[in-house]
Amino acid sequence: QVQLEESGGGLVQAGGSLSLSCAASGHTFSRYAMGWFRQAPGKEREFVATIRQSDGGTYYADSVKGRFTISRDNAKNTVALQMNSLKPEDTAVYSCAASYYGAGYAISQWEYDYWGQGTQVTVSS
Image 1 (tube, helix red, strand yellow):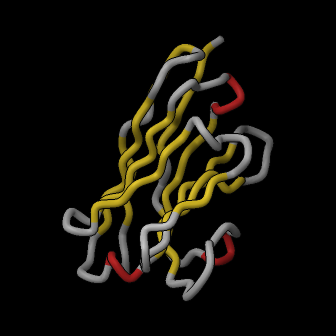
Image 2 (cartoon, rainbow, N blue to C red):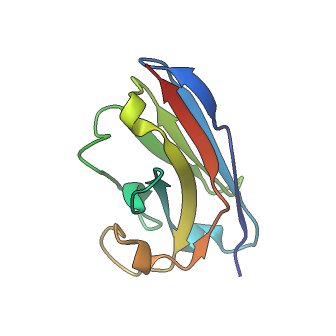
């Protein structure tokens, strides 16, 4: 069982930056791939970024590539999402998730086993 809790959301102007953090419980954090997803009002949840458990490799959605950076600290059981050059279309509830997926990059929400409650990110124009 893994419990996840996000923090760091808020309101920012377009072009600004925010850093999200996700704290995980349990002693097996390093065995999980971690991901960030987002869901805007009236839209389906969409993949943002993932980081592998094996080598720390990362993969991003095209919409955030070059602006967002995902990272993890296995010693602290945390995963972070640094968001730069934010746009109004980045406004959404951001959730972190943990996947025991064995190989490759977990980019589908159905590959994730545990989810946090989410944190609101609002980007004003």
